[in-house]
Length: 131
Image (cartoon, rainbow, N blue to C red; front, side, top):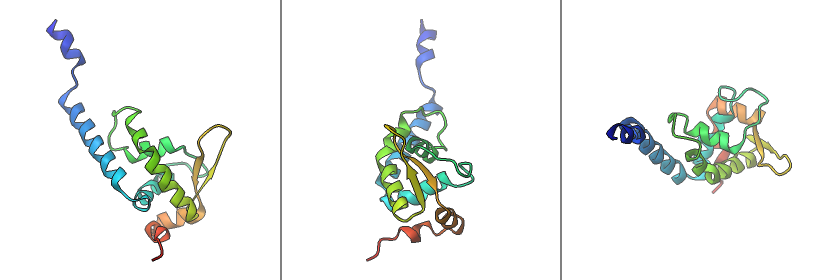
């Protein structure tokens, strides 16, 4: 019987991974939309997505948590609202564009301007709020 109980117990590594992922989710949620946008844009760049490819918000949430494999599909969804706000800021700065399909969430794609900002490391400059 003891053996059966052990099958359902999470390994210490898995528990540590989940705790680290939760800490990262909390850190990302605490960022401003502009700060998060700087981290989201590379998820639409050529190294992460094939050119001309459109991604869903969920895929970008997963991109942000790519260093935590095996945490499941629901944890990244905790970032949906902050990532949407970040994408809206990126779209306002013309660094990404979206297209909607009927009854689906928008699909996002990096623009030429966004690819240039990413390559030059100037994403934050494009998102700066004028004072």
